[in-house]
Length: 220
Image (cartoon, rainbow, N blue to C red; front, side):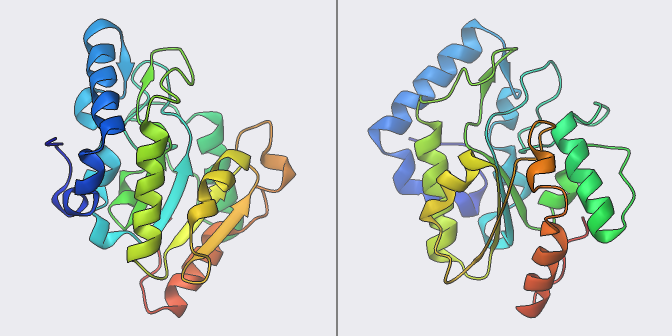
């Protein structure tokens, strides 16, 4: 099956695209886009991969679902399209960066600037029905994104993985912690951020690790 995805990812994931589950997943997704309102826009489903080619991945941040409100999702985990107000979880991420690194909270919640520096903003599920959180879970996306994480873990070295909340931490069990830095904390949502996300200093820790391994720091 030919999938329109950035060329370095195309090579890495070629085998995955031929598997029966992936063909079933694509049929399901095509049907959903044809018959109901689905986010992100179709051309943005693989946007995280377009903005952050495999060769450039230095940090992976795992999310769960795309935002399901109109105009929010832009294909990058936790990110919103230009001009949209930052949702509570994203605002808490910015607050932690402000506390950790002294950087002011940005006016835009579009995180393409991170992706361009090598931050793969990967949701476990890459599509969702409008206003129906979790509606595209258990259709095959999770298997696909597990394969993505495993490829990064197996084929690269010294990548920083940020796993926020129990869901991301469970999904990250396949990461080789001998080769990579795995940072774990509570989820940045308003319900959990006070339980260990605030004060986790993941952003300065990531930069210190990258610097120690001869890589440029991320401008968060």
